[in-house]
Length: 447
Image (cartoon, rainbow, N blue to C red; front, side, top):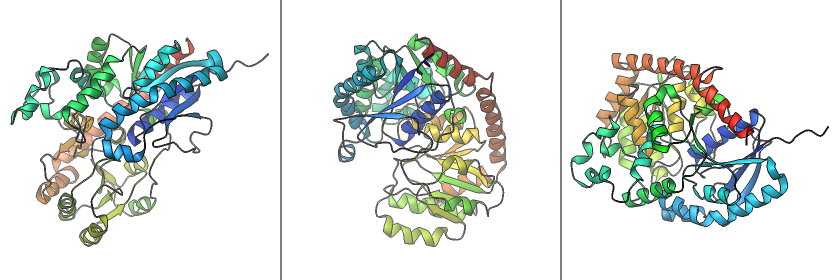
Protein backbone atom coordinates (compact mmCIF):
# COMPACT_ATOMS: atom_id res chain seq x y z
CA UNK A 1 0.00 0.00 0.00
CA UNK A 2 1.33 3.45 -0.89
CA UNK A 3 2.26 5.46 2.17
CA UNK A 4 0.16 8.57 2.63
CA UNK A 5 2.12 11.82 2.20
CA UNK A 6 2.60 14.00 5.26
CA UNK A 7 0.53 17.14 5.61
CA UNK A 8 2.48 20.16 4.35
CA UNK A 9 2.61 23.46 6.22
CA UNK A 10 3.73 26.68 4.51
CA UNK A 11 5.56 29.14 6.78
CA UNK A 12 5.82 32.85 5.93
CA UNK A 13 8.34 34.59 8.25
CA UNK A 14 9.32 38.24 8.55
CA UNK A 15 12.86 38.55 7.12
CA UNK A 16 14.48 39.67 10.39
CA UNK A 17 16.56 37.72 12.91
CA UNK A 18 14.15 37.61 15.86
CA UNK A 19 11.10 36.75 13.73
CA UNK A 20 12.98 34.17 11.64
CA UNK A 21 14.38 32.46 14.73
CA UNK A 22 10.93 31.85 16.23
CA UNK A 23 9.40 30.78 12.89
CA UNK A 24 12.17 28.26 12.24
CA UNK A 25 11.75 26.88 15.77
CA UNK A 26 8.04 26.47 15.03
CA UNK A 27 8.88 24.70 11.77
CA UNK A 28 11.22 22.34 13.61
CA UNK A 29 8.56 21.58 16.25
CA UNK A 30 5.96 20.77 13.56
CA UNK A 31 8.46 18.74 11.54
CA UNK A 32 9.14 16.61 14.63
CA UNK A 33 5.40 15.94 14.76
CA UNK A 34 5.45 14.54 11.23
CA UNK A 35 4.58 17.52 9.04
CA UNK A 36 6.40 18.54 5.87
CA UNK A 37 7.63 22.13 5.99
CA UNK A 38 7.95 24.69 3.20
CA UNK A 39 9.39 28.11 4.04
CA UNK A 40 8.24 30.96 1.79
CA UNK A 41 11.04 33.50 1.98
CA UNK A 42 11.67 36.88 0.44
CA UNK A 43 14.83 37.81 -1.42
CA UNK A 44 15.77 39.98 1.57
CA UNK A 45 17.58 38.04 4.33
CA UNK A 46 17.40 34.82 2.32
CA UNK A 47 17.79 31.67 4.44
CA UNK A 48 20.74 29.38 3.90
CA UNK A 49 20.48 25.60 4.32
CA UNK A 50 21.73 24.28 7.63
CA UNK A 51 22.06 20.99 9.45
CA UNK A 52 19.05 21.86 11.62
CA UNK A 53 16.67 22.13 8.66
CA UNK A 54 17.88 19.64 6.01
CA UNK A 55 14.38 18.38 5.20
CA UNK A 56 12.71 21.77 4.86
CA UNK A 57 11.90 22.95 1.36
CA UNK A 58 11.86 26.61 0.37
CA UNK A 59 10.19 28.85 -2.18
CA UNK A 60 11.26 32.41 -2.90
CA UNK A 61 8.76 35.25 -3.12
CA UNK A 62 10.16 37.24 -6.03
CA UNK A 63 9.89 40.98 -6.49
CA UNK A 64 10.75 41.66 -2.87
CA UNK A 65 12.84 44.52 -1.60
CA UNK A 66 16.58 44.87 -1.18
CA UNK A 67 18.77 45.63 1.82
CA UNK A 68 19.32 49.11 0.38
CA UNK A 69 15.57 49.76 0.41
CA UNK A 70 15.41 48.46 3.99
CA UNK A 71 18.03 51.01 5.01
CA UNK A 72 16.37 53.83 3.08
CA UNK A 73 12.81 53.14 4.22
CA UNK A 74 13.42 51.91 7.77
CA UNK A 75 11.85 48.70 9.16
CA UNK A 76 8.23 49.91 9.48
CA UNK A 77 7.82 51.46 6.02
CA UNK A 78 9.80 48.56 4.59
CA UNK A 79 7.29 46.06 6.01
CA UNK A 80 4.32 48.04 4.71
CA UNK A 81 5.80 48.09 1.21
CA UNK A 82 6.87 44.44 1.45
CA UNK A 83 3.25 43.45 2.03
CA UNK A 84 2.23 45.30 -1.12
CA UNK A 85 4.87 43.88 -3.46
CA UNK A 86 4.80 40.27 -2.23
CA UNK A 87 1.10 39.34 -2.46
CA UNK A 88 0.93 38.44 -6.17
CA UNK A 89 4.24 36.58 -6.15
CA UNK A 90 3.19 34.58 -3.11
CA UNK A 91 -0.06 33.61 -4.85
CA UNK A 92 2.12 32.19 -7.63
CA UNK A 93 4.20 30.26 -5.07
CA UNK A 94 1.07 28.79 -3.48
CA UNK A 95 -0.34 27.84 -6.89
CA UNK A 96 2.84 25.91 -7.72
CA UNK A 97 2.85 24.18 -4.33
CA UNK A 98 -0.76 23.09 -4.80
CA UNK A 99 0.06 21.72 -8.25
CA UNK A 100 2.96 19.72 -6.80
CA UNK A 101 1.39 18.54 -3.54
CA UNK A 102 -2.36 18.92 -4.04
CA UNK A 103 -4.50 18.41 -0.96
CA UNK A 104 -1.42 17.66 1.15
CA UNK A 105 -0.90 21.44 1.55
CA UNK A 106 -2.80 21.90 4.81
CA UNK A 107 -2.43 25.56 5.75
CA UNK A 108 -0.38 28.75 5.65
CA UNK A 109 1.17 29.97 8.90
CA UNK A 110 2.27 33.58 8.64
CA UNK A 111 3.95 36.05 10.94
CA UNK A 112 1.24 38.51 11.95
CA UNK A 113 3.14 41.33 10.20
CA UNK A 114 3.26 39.44 6.86
CA UNK A 115 -0.48 39.87 6.38
CA UNK A 116 -0.31 39.61 2.57
CA UNK A 117 -0.07 35.84 3.08
CA UNK A 118 -3.63 35.67 4.41
CA UNK A 119 -5.14 37.25 1.29
CA UNK A 120 -3.18 34.85 -0.91
CA UNK A 121 -4.32 31.83 1.13
CA UNK A 122 -7.95 32.95 0.88
CA UNK A 123 -7.70 32.92 -2.94
CA UNK A 124 -7.00 29.18 -2.78
CA UNK A 125 -9.43 28.47 0.09
CA UNK A 126 -6.49 27.46 2.26
CA UNK A 127 -6.81 27.90 6.03
CA UNK A 128 -4.44 30.51 7.43
CA UNK A 129 -2.95 30.76 10.92
CA UNK A 130 -1.45 33.86 12.54
CA UNK A 131 1.82 33.31 14.36
CA UNK A 132 2.87 35.98 16.86
CA UNK A 133 6.60 35.84 17.55
CA UNK A 134 6.22 38.47 20.29
CA UNK A 135 4.47 38.46 23.66
CA UNK A 136 0.72 38.24 24.13
CA UNK A 137 0.78 41.63 25.86
CA UNK A 138 2.54 43.23 22.88
CA UNK A 139 0.07 41.61 20.48
CA UNK A 140 -2.78 43.03 22.53
CA UNK A 141 -1.21 46.52 22.55
CA UNK A 142 -0.73 46.51 18.78
CA UNK A 143 -4.28 45.30 18.30
CA UNK A 144 -5.71 48.10 20.45
CA UNK A 145 -3.51 50.71 18.76
CA UNK A 146 -4.61 49.54 15.32
CA UNK A 147 -8.31 49.53 16.09
CA UNK A 148 -9.10 53.12 15.10
CA UNK A 149 -7.52 55.85 13.00
CA UNK A 150 -8.30 58.40 15.70
CA UNK A 151 -7.38 56.34 18.75
CA UNK A 152 -7.94 58.13 22.09
CA UNK A 153 -5.60 55.59 23.71
CA UNK A 154 -2.73 57.43 22.01
CA UNK A 155 -3.65 61.03 22.86
CA UNK A 156 -1.23 61.32 25.83
CA UNK A 157 1.68 60.48 23.52
CA UNK A 158 1.13 63.85 21.86
CA UNK A 159 1.19 65.80 25.15
CA UNK A 160 4.54 66.65 26.81
CA UNK A 161 4.90 64.97 30.20
CA UNK A 162 1.84 62.76 29.73
CA UNK A 163 3.76 59.76 28.38
CA UNK A 164 4.80 58.75 31.93
CA UNK A 165 1.19 58.22 33.02
CA UNK A 166 -0.20 54.72 33.52
CA UNK A 167 -2.69 53.34 30.97
CA UNK A 168 -5.72 52.24 33.04
CA UNK A 169 -6.68 49.45 30.61
CA UNK A 170 -3.15 48.07 30.41
CA UNK A 171 -1.70 48.37 33.94
CA UNK A 172 1.23 48.51 34.69
CA UNK A 173 2.09 49.84 31.22
CA UNK A 174 2.64 53.57 30.71
CA UNK A 175 1.89 55.41 27.50
CA UNK A 176 5.60 55.51 26.71
CA UNK A 177 5.73 51.70 27.00
CA UNK A 178 3.40 51.23 24.01
CA UNK A 179 5.07 49.45 21.07
CA UNK A 180 5.90 52.48 18.94
CA UNK A 181 8.94 52.39 16.67
CA UNK A 182 12.23 54.24 17.06
CA UNK A 183 12.62 53.91 13.29
CA UNK A 184 9.44 55.64 12.12
CA UNK A 185 6.79 58.22 13.06
CA UNK A 186 3.84 57.06 15.15
CA UNK A 187 1.59 57.32 12.09
CA UNK A 188 3.62 54.67 10.25
CA UNK A 189 3.42 52.21 13.15
CA UNK A 190 -0.34 52.75 13.40
CA UNK A 191 -0.71 52.20 9.66
CA UNK A 192 1.09 48.85 9.93
CA UNK A 193 -0.96 47.78 12.97
CA UNK A 194 -4.24 48.80 11.33
CA UNK A 195 -3.49 46.90 8.14
CA UNK A 196 -2.49 43.80 10.10
CA UNK A 197 -5.68 43.99 12.17
CA UNK A 198 -7.97 44.70 9.20
CA UNK A 199 -6.72 41.61 7.33
CA UNK A 200 -7.46 39.16 10.12
CA UNK A 201 -9.71 36.30 9.09
CA UNK A 202 -7.35 33.54 10.16
CA UNK A 203 -8.64 30.32 11.68
CA UNK A 204 -6.68 30.76 14.89
CA UNK A 205 -3.64 32.39 16.49
CA UNK A 206 -0.55 30.66 17.83
CA UNK A 207 1.84 32.61 19.98
CA UNK A 208 5.35 32.06 21.31
CA UNK A 209 4.54 32.46 24.99
CA UNK A 210 3.39 30.45 27.98
CA UNK A 211 0.25 30.74 30.08
CA UNK A 212 2.39 30.91 33.21
CA UNK A 213 3.86 34.22 31.97
CA UNK A 214 0.83 36.00 30.49
CA UNK A 215 -2.44 34.36 31.51
CA UNK A 216 -4.46 37.61 31.78
CA UNK A 217 -3.21 38.99 28.43
CA UNK A 218 -3.98 35.68 26.73
CA UNK A 219 -7.51 35.69 28.10
CA UNK A 220 -8.02 39.27 26.91
CA UNK A 221 -6.74 38.23 23.46
CA UNK A 222 -9.31 35.45 23.29
CA UNK A 223 -12.11 37.88 24.08
CA UNK A 224 -10.79 40.51 21.67
CA UNK A 225 -10.24 38.22 18.68
CA UNK A 226 -13.10 35.80 19.27
CA UNK A 227 -10.80 33.07 17.94
CA UNK A 228 -8.86 30.16 19.45
CA UNK A 229 -5.49 31.18 20.92
CA UNK A 230 -2.74 28.60 21.38
CA UNK A 231 0.21 29.65 23.59
CA UNK A 232 2.87 27.16 22.45
CA UNK A 233 6.09 28.72 23.76
CA UNK A 234 8.84 29.12 24.52
CA UNK A 235 9.47 27.33 21.22
CA UNK A 236 13.21 27.03 21.76
CA UNK A 237 12.35 24.50 24.50
CA UNK A 238 10.01 22.52 22.24
CA UNK A 239 12.45 22.34 19.33
CA UNK A 240 16.06 23.38 19.66
CA UNK A 241 17.08 24.86 16.33
CA UNK A 242 20.35 26.63 15.64
CA UNK A 243 19.76 29.57 13.34
CA UNK A 244 21.53 32.91 12.99
CA UNK A 245 21.88 35.45 10.20
CA UNK A 246 25.15 36.55 11.83
CA UNK A 247 28.24 34.40 12.40
CA UNK A 248 28.53 33.35 16.02
CA UNK A 249 31.92 33.64 17.73
CA UNK A 250 33.06 30.74 19.91
CA UNK A 251 35.84 32.52 21.81
CA UNK A 252 33.31 33.71 24.39
CA UNK A 253 32.60 30.16 25.58
CA UNK A 254 36.30 29.54 26.20
CA UNK A 255 36.42 32.82 28.13
CA UNK A 256 33.33 31.95 30.17
CA UNK A 257 34.86 28.61 31.13
CA UNK A 258 37.52 30.51 33.06
CA UNK A 259 35.07 32.65 35.09
CA UNK A 260 33.54 32.01 38.51
CA UNK A 261 29.99 30.72 38.81
CA UNK A 262 27.25 33.36 38.33
CA UNK A 263 29.85 36.12 38.18
CA UNK A 264 29.48 37.35 34.58
CA UNK A 265 26.96 39.79 33.18
CA UNK A 266 26.25 39.09 29.52
CA UNK A 267 25.41 42.12 27.33
CA UNK A 268 23.69 41.87 23.95
CA UNK A 269 21.37 44.49 22.47
CA UNK A 270 19.95 42.50 19.56
CA UNK A 271 20.31 42.47 15.79
CA UNK A 272 18.89 45.94 15.00
CA UNK A 273 19.54 48.31 17.91
CA UNK A 274 22.28 50.92 17.60
CA UNK A 275 24.00 53.19 20.12
CA UNK A 276 25.64 56.59 20.04
CA UNK A 277 29.40 56.70 20.60
CA UNK A 278 29.05 58.57 23.89
CA UNK A 279 26.53 56.06 25.26
CA UNK A 280 28.82 53.17 24.40
CA UNK A 281 31.70 54.82 26.26
CA UNK A 282 29.52 55.56 29.32
CA UNK A 283 28.35 51.96 29.25
CA UNK A 284 31.94 50.71 29.12
CA UNK A 285 33.02 52.86 32.07
CA UNK A 286 29.98 51.81 34.11
CA UNK A 287 30.71 48.15 33.44
CA UNK A 288 34.39 48.57 34.32
CA UNK A 289 33.60 50.50 37.53
CA UNK A 290 31.13 47.82 38.65
CA UNK A 291 34.09 45.44 39.13
CA UNK A 292 32.02 42.59 37.60
CA UNK A 293 33.34 40.43 34.74
CA UNK A 294 31.29 40.95 31.58
CA UNK A 295 30.83 39.43 28.14
CA UNK A 296 29.79 42.11 25.65
CA UNK A 297 28.37 41.60 22.15
CA UNK A 298 29.09 44.61 19.93
CA UNK A 299 27.47 43.85 16.59
CA UNK A 300 29.00 45.32 13.40
CA UNK A 301 26.93 48.37 12.46
CA UNK A 302 25.58 48.90 15.98
CA UNK A 303 27.74 51.96 16.65
CA UNK A 304 29.16 54.69 14.37
CA UNK A 305 32.93 54.73 13.71
CA UNK A 306 33.62 51.34 15.33
CA UNK A 307 37.33 51.55 14.49
CA UNK A 308 37.91 54.63 16.64
CA UNK A 309 35.76 53.17 19.40
CA UNK A 310 37.61 49.87 19.39
CA UNK A 311 40.86 51.26 20.78
CA UNK A 312 39.01 53.34 23.37
CA UNK A 313 36.96 50.36 24.59
CA UNK A 314 39.87 47.95 24.65
CA UNK A 315 41.66 50.16 27.15
CA UNK A 316 38.60 50.35 29.41
CA UNK A 317 37.40 46.76 29.33
CA UNK A 318 40.57 44.70 28.95
CA UNK A 319 40.89 43.95 32.66
CA UNK A 320 37.50 42.30 33.24
CA UNK A 321 35.65 42.19 29.93
CA UNK A 322 35.51 40.17 26.74
CA UNK A 323 34.03 41.58 23.51
CA UNK A 324 32.66 39.55 20.57
CA UNK A 325 30.76 40.52 17.40
CA UNK A 326 28.00 37.94 17.97
CA UNK A 327 27.50 35.05 20.40
CA UNK A 328 25.66 31.70 20.60
CA UNK A 329 23.15 33.23 23.00
CA UNK A 330 21.29 30.18 24.30
CA UNK A 331 24.60 28.49 25.10
CA UNK A 332 25.86 31.64 26.82
CA UNK A 333 22.74 32.07 28.95
CA UNK A 334 22.86 28.44 30.06
CA UNK A 335 26.52 28.71 31.08
CA UNK A 336 27.13 28.42 34.83
CA UNK A 337 29.33 31.54 34.83
CA UNK A 338 26.51 33.84 33.65
CA UNK A 339 24.53 35.49 36.45
CA UNK A 340 22.81 38.35 34.62
CA UNK A 341 21.80 39.54 31.16
CA UNK A 342 21.75 43.15 29.92
CA UNK A 343 19.29 43.04 27.03
CA UNK A 344 17.27 45.15 24.60
CA UNK A 345 14.35 42.93 25.72
CA UNK A 346 13.50 41.37 22.38
CA UNK A 347 11.02 38.58 23.04
CA UNK A 348 13.31 35.70 22.01
CA UNK A 349 16.08 37.01 24.26
CA UNK A 350 13.63 37.48 27.12
CA UNK A 351 12.16 33.98 27.07
CA UNK A 352 15.61 32.47 26.61
CA UNK A 353 16.81 34.34 29.70
CA UNK A 354 13.75 33.43 31.79
CA UNK A 355 14.08 29.79 30.69
CA UNK A 356 17.59 29.74 32.17
CA UNK A 357 16.62 31.59 35.37
CA UNK A 358 18.79 34.61 34.51
CA UNK A 359 17.60 38.05 35.74
CA UNK A 360 18.03 41.07 33.48
CA UNK A 361 19.02 44.70 33.04
CA UNK A 362 16.57 46.19 30.55
CA UNK A 363 17.47 48.82 27.96
CA UNK A 364 14.66 48.62 25.37
CA UNK A 365 15.21 50.26 22.01
CA UNK A 366 11.98 50.08 20.03
CA UNK A 367 8.58 48.47 19.54
CA UNK A 368 7.53 45.57 21.74
CA UNK A 369 10.82 45.71 23.67
CA UNK A 370 9.38 48.54 25.78
CA UNK A 371 6.35 46.44 26.75
CA UNK A 372 8.56 43.50 27.69
CA UNK A 373 10.97 45.64 29.74
CA UNK A 374 8.10 47.00 31.80
CA UNK A 375 6.80 43.48 32.47
CA UNK A 376 10.25 42.26 33.45
CA UNK A 377 10.56 45.06 35.99
CA UNK A 378 7.02 45.40 37.36
CA UNK A 379 5.14 42.13 36.72
CA UNK A 380 7.71 39.33 36.84
CA UNK A 381 10.08 41.46 38.97
CA UNK A 382 13.24 39.95 37.52
CA UNK A 383 14.58 43.04 35.76
CA UNK A 384 16.00 46.52 36.30
CA UNK A 385 15.12 49.04 33.62
CA UNK A 386 17.65 51.72 32.66
CA UNK A 387 15.60 54.65 31.38
CA UNK A 388 16.44 58.05 29.98
CA UNK A 389 17.68 59.39 26.68
CA UNK A 390 21.35 59.03 27.57
CA UNK A 391 23.27 56.45 29.57
CA UNK A 392 25.31 57.62 32.54
CA UNK A 393 28.21 55.54 33.85
CA UNK A 394 27.04 55.92 37.46
CA UNK A 395 23.58 54.54 36.60
CA UNK A 396 25.17 51.65 34.71
CA UNK A 397 27.48 50.82 37.63
CA UNK A 398 24.62 50.89 40.15
CA UNK A 399 22.36 48.70 38.01
CA UNK A 400 25.06 46.10 37.43
CA UNK A 401 25.99 45.96 41.12
CA UNK A 402 22.34 45.73 42.16
CA UNK A 403 21.70 42.84 39.77
CA UNK A 404 24.93 40.93 40.40
CA UNK A 405 25.89 41.65 44.01
CA UNK A 406 23.10 43.24 46.08
CA UNK A 407 20.27 41.62 48.04
CA UNK A 408 17.68 42.82 45.50
CA UNK A 409 19.63 40.99 42.79
CA UNK A 410 19.59 37.83 44.91
CA UNK A 411 15.79 38.07 45.19
CA UNK A 412 15.45 38.66 41.45
CA UNK A 413 17.52 35.55 40.83
CA UNK A 414 15.20 33.53 43.08
CA UNK A 415 12.13 34.84 41.25
CA UNK A 416 13.79 34.09 37.89
CA UNK A 417 14.51 30.51 38.96
CA UNK A 418 10.89 30.15 40.07
CA UNK A 419 9.70 31.30 36.62
CA UNK A 420 12.17 28.90 35.03
CA UNK A 421 10.55 26.01 36.91
CA UNK A 422 7.08 27.09 35.79
CA UNK A 423 8.14 27.40 32.14
CA UNK A 424 9.87 24.03 32.22
CA UNK A 425 6.67 22.50 33.64
CA UNK A 426 4.58 24.09 30.87
CA UNK A 427 6.90 22.64 28.19
CA UNK A 428 6.93 19.10 29.63
CA UNK A 429 4.43 16.41 28.71
CA UNK A 430 1.08 17.39 30.20
CA UNK A 431 2.08 21.05 30.58
CA UNK A 432 0.03 23.90 29.10
CA UNK A 433 2.39 24.80 26.24
CA UNK A 434 3.05 21.14 25.42
CA UNK A 435 -0.70 20.49 25.27
CA UNK A 436 -1.33 23.60 23.16
CA UNK A 437 1.26 22.49 20.60
CA UNK A 438 -0.33 19.04 20.42
CA UNK A 439 -3.80 20.57 20.00
CA UNK A 440 -2.51 22.77 17.20
CA UNK A 441 -0.96 19.73 15.49
CA UNK A 442 -4.33 17.96 15.80
CA UNK A 443 -5.99 21.00 14.17
CA UNK A 444 -3.64 20.77 11.15
CA UNK A 445 -4.15 17.01 10.82
CA UNK A 446 -7.92 17.52 10.80
CA UNK A 447 -7.80 19.94 7.83
